[in-house]
Image 1 (tube, helix red, strand yellow):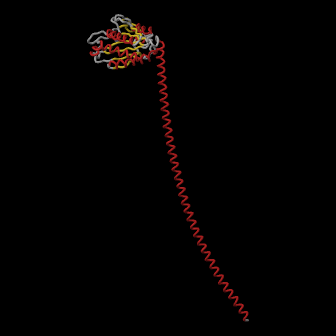
Image 2: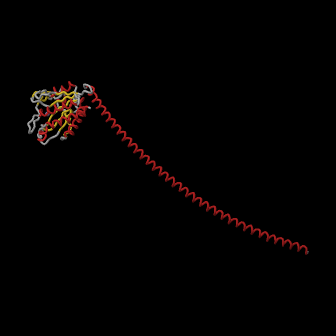
Image 3: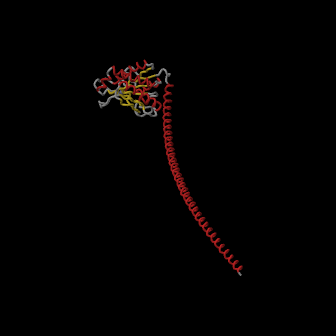
Length: 335
Ligand SMILES: [Zn+2]
């Protein structure tokens, strides 16, 4: 019986010890588990915080990238706008330059055309080195009421020789002054080597305008210069003017050259003599122009109706000054 008790006690003891051991083991396990859980939690927390940080960083990076892209887009847009602006400016400049080129081309063409016209005259003249100038002293001492057509085929009839102006104080007839200057001009031009033909050397010779134009045509003159003095009811009017043919069907062939010569001769005259400049005027109503086949100009040297110019035009010195200015101008025109 005792032995049986001892065995039961031993079993109880074993059971108790086993229970204690198991309990201890369980609580260690539990503790370890809880430590592990805490660790995992902490890790998770760390991880999540890291992830969050990363996310924030990524977001920040993304926003930075987006911002950068936006800026780049902006710059690209701006540069595009600048490009477009530049292109339009370049286009406008190109158009302007094109227009300018075209205008220059037209001008060059016009100059060429006028040069061709001038060349035709040079070829048709009596040799380039021996140029012919016809001097036509205006008016005659005899007037004539006989009429002649103002232009070839025209029904407008004009008196052949109505007589010229007269000095307001000197009473000198215009033809006297005209002839005095014409003769001086002839000497100056001959000295320069020109062949000079006068339409007349005597004041009493009354030819009319058509016959005098024919002198220039027959001579195939390089230039016909008609010499006159002016008159006006307004006695304060003074100074010189140059008349040239306007562009009509009769004068088209001589229009450009006559205008150019007239401008050149007048420029020299006014600057040499220093008189009042009344300009170059185109006329379609002058018989002497309309019948001319060669370049023709007409100078009005001053006003015999003006007291001071009447006085000047009657002096040898002033007549010589005018002749000199005309000779310089003809030289400049025909060179
Ligand atoms: Zn006259």
